[in-house]
Length: 186
Ligand code: HEC
Ligand code: HEC
Ligand code: HEC
Ligand code: HEC
Image (cartoon, rainbow, N blue to C red; front, top):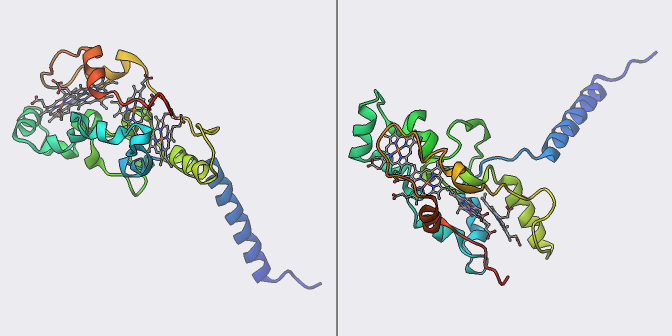
């Protein structure tokens, strides 16, 4: 009896691996893609330009700020050498600092507290919205919805318990400073 050629066995193994990989891809684990992947759409005035709103808030500078003298002073008191490298600071001054395995290559910690710090990893939303816009559809398709965190309690995950003095947090006032609605008349 003739055996199966090794080439066929290798090919079959290769195809199985490819189909496994494609199945994994199909599940689309959301990744942190960074604000640069949001701006192609969310910089448009017709969509409310959430990007410009965010850029004008201290959240967009929260990582850069960690370079300043004052930050180094805060850090020094805690035995932290470089605040831009320490989770003790980054957990509030950046996005997904504790989740680096989910960073996509377009992700930049330099962007500080960006969209995905509050809305979660956005790769699937960005991809599906792109597909839908190319197809001429409207609204948010199935599976593309991102969490929209609600209320003061969410903000307090960072606006309370910092290892340095902070201003008292007034939720209504603070929200007014950072809110970034979609236009009502779309
Ligand atoms: C290809 C265009 C496109 C890209 C890229 C995109 N969005 Fe969106 N997004 C939209 C549109 C359009 C809507 C409004 C949909 C509607 O309600 O009609 C939206 C809605 C949203 C919403 C509110 C609805 C929801 O899902 O909860 C959030 C939050 C959001 N986007 C965040 C992001 C973030 C964060 C990124 C980057 C990681 C991003 N978007 C990238 C097009 C895009
Ligand atoms: C629990 C969240 C949290 C952690 C952890 C944190 N910060 Fe902050 N930080 C904040 C918030 C919120 C503000 C805004 C303060 C305000 O509104 O008064 C802030 C503001 C600052 C400021 C500007 C205000 C000031 O005091 O001059 C500096 C500098 C700073 N942080 C440095 C650091 C450093 C360095 C670390 C790490 C050793 C760190 N932060 C860790 C939440 C945090
Ligand atoms: C500090 C947290 C935070 C950051 C940073 C942030 N958002 Fe939001 N965003 C929220 C919250 C909270 C809501 C929900 C408001 C509500 O339900 O009324 C929201 C709502 C939205 C909505 C829906 C608005 C509507 O009218 O329904 C969009 C779109 C959105 N965000 C996009 C973005 C984009 C794009 C970025 C980055 C450029 C971003 N957000 C950054 C907290 C944040
Ligand atoms: C991931 C952590 C994080 C979350 C969540 C967060 N913030 Fe912040 N926020 C910061 C940090 C850090 C600063 C300080 C940035 C700086 O000064 O460089 C800040 C600064 C601010 C400031 C400016 C404060 C000042 O006195 O200048 C406002 C306003 C603000 N946040 C509103 C909010 C609101 C409203 C929410 C909830 C919807 C929220 N933030 C959620 C980390 C966070």
